[in-house]
Image 1 (tube, rainbow, N blue to C red):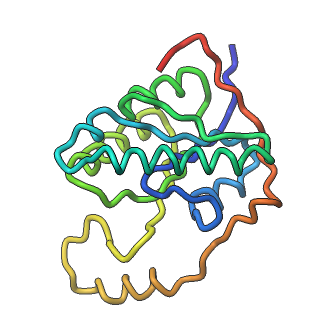
Image 2 (cartoon, rainbow, N blue to C red; image 1 turned 180 degrees about the horizontal axis):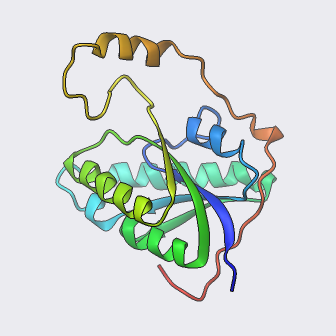
Length: 178
């Protein structure tokens, strides 16, 4: 059975549609898009987590999905570790690329992202991460940091015109639970 080729937009701490650089670039592709958010139990249970934050995330996703109804798509919400979610999606689809923001969170999400980079690479999945703020991940020295910060903070925003977006609607098969 030939799996359907798709791209994925992985929403993390970047819960918005209009000024979402990963979504902007994902929409340039001809492949169908799957929009996802993952409530990861390890991240939710981490010591810097709070139920108020997760309530905000859930309410934000509800509002985003309400706005997406006019485009006949949705953000699929998963409750599992990212690795398991992406393994399940790779089982069901031929994932070409994943688009997400670089998450600047805590040590747990940083280690998760390093593990995801290996998983994606091993499965020949291109991961396009976009910087959303002045923090430059993985710098060995701050020598050029000011210039990097200035470039990031003054670059032109790539805005998604929500009413002009045409998504290819995807439905997840239900033969495997996450």
